Length: 63
Image (cartoon, rainbow, N blue to C red; front, top):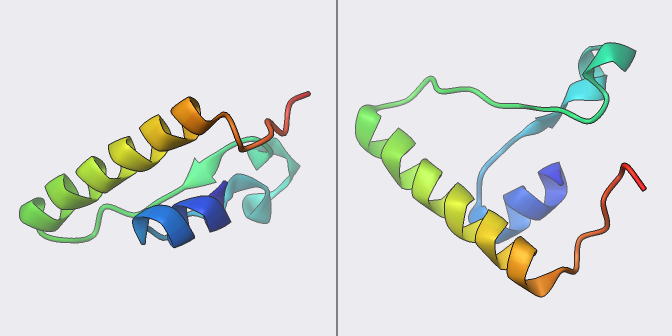
């Protein structure tokens, strides 16, 4: 998912399991930016997730 969001929305996320096994299934992100950039990033995230939902092309890791 992190790679998809980087390629599709140009947003950097870190897979949660990088921080240990309890992080499996989660994504980490940072909000250390301007309000305007955060709003823009949220819009890109929303569009990427909507595209993912409509395409149904990304397999769930929880199958």
